Length: 334
Image 1 (cartoon, rainbow, N blue to C red):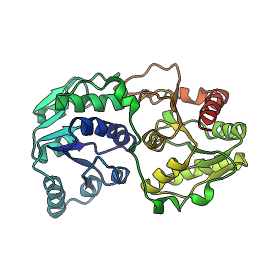
Image 2 (image 1 turned 30 degrees about the vertical axis):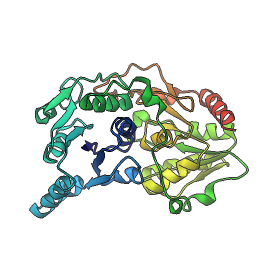
Image 3 (image 1 turned 120 degrees about the horizontal axis):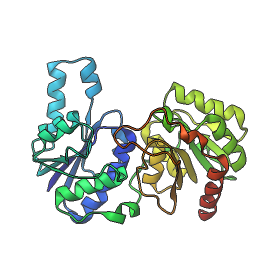
């Protein structure tokens, strides 16, 4: 069976969607899986044993500098791995539905009450109800199971095996930053939205309380400034160089613990089987907590269709609460 999964972005959602690959592979061990992703995030899919081919679309460049030749190249990329027996749109937007439809196979997706752009359902041959209140990882798994006629995944999504991998050459970039004498804790202080960010001064205070080797990652100039602000306030903090996605996977895979907001780098820990603490305020919890992947959620009521951008309750999470949970996870990992 030839199956295509479409999830173009963002980094975190692609990772959360990847957990469904194991469900497909267990049910259909001989199937061929193609994943379609935005070129900016596609490297996160590298080295997955469950994916046969990754189609890397550059829709941003196409939009910025449109040409018939560029459009034709993107279309050829979509069609080349086909024909498909089934195309599943995990993204649920008009652009992803169009992408799925162009791939040349029967399309499946969320029904109109289960996504933010209901018009996308007009492009599906069949759509399925998946409550918005479910964690994102469970929603993706549910859609995959309904599309393939499989039983609902339930707790199986929380029991996934590590599925994000890197290569030896990716480790060398950050190797010198890791300590052999102290536990290595990776902070992810910046996310894509202010209402998901824990304050840098509180990260610095947390670093002082934990007293281990603290590393901070970053992906752009704003994130670098935040990382440097934390390092300036705590002597045991080191700022990592800017890493590619595969290098970031390697760094996360070596960490003893990852702490951060609802963001792709934090979710990499979940996908690598590395202990993590993910902080949630106004945004919904997106995966089922495990014994090593824990969450701290504020009391804010979440609007699942449009989270409140002015809700900054995540900033009020106490440093002591994170530190106690971190100590337990570090002790468990000894």
